Image (tube, rainbow, N blue to C red; front, side, top):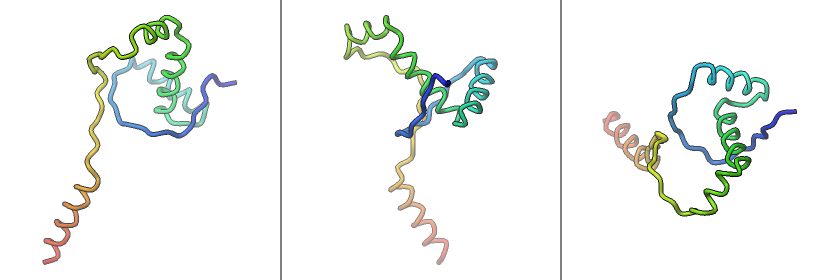
Length: 95
């Protein structure tokens, strides 16, 4: 029985570096569960966060602690602005 259960939720794009062997195992586990590698990493981290008692105590002691961001989160373009600019480009190209 798999340890992880994957459900749909809001996602962001981020970049991280992994050991090659870890990346291969993530792919293998994703194939085993028939889900994406992204889902394996996401749910795996959620599992660790909930099972690590020391981390849970740390969160309880300092719930509002601000830490430096080290995960590289990709910025998503404003879809309304890109559609508006795209429409202008199409309109000018049609002239």
